[in-house]
Length: 74
Image (cartoon, rainbow, N blue to C red; front, side, top):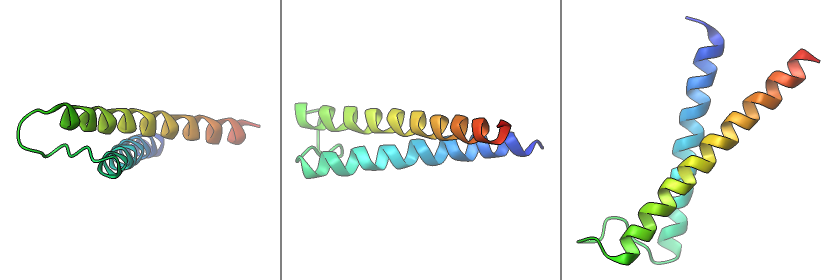
């Protein structure tokens, strides 16, 4: 297995999970519980924060990888 594919997969996973957890914790601080009974506006907003955090974390991981690759080429 190619080492670069391994690094890509692990960094994407860590970025996504880390960002999703940050979104979840931010939602809890704002009183948005994604596990509340029913689909209230607060729980849907909390779910959106988790998704937004996961997406941002994934993008940060990809940017980190691209800057790491750029410095390796220089």
